[in-house]
Amino acid sequence: MKAITTIRNLRFPLGQTVATPAALAEFPPEEILEALRRHASGDWKEMDPHDQKQNERAAETGEGRILSAYTLAHGRLWVITEADRSVTTILRPEDY
Image (cartoon, rainbow, N blue to C red; front, side):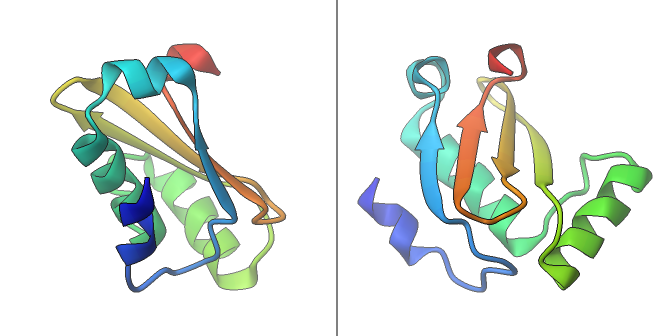
């Protein structure tokens, strides 16, 4: 996934980016990269208002996990950046 390095305007560090085998099998690379780009830029419109607020707070303060959920052509995809910003995981909800 070399193209990940082309994501610009990150609102927070992503750390190491990983994906579950099931997510990699179900979603084409373009959809995975689009979800990751939206997550890193702070596009949390598909989250409920409470979760959007928590994500905003976590992005601004650097404290707390950031969770995004996207409905894509091939299904639902989650992107989670850990509270310490060491890892961002791309997964299907059923992989959680």
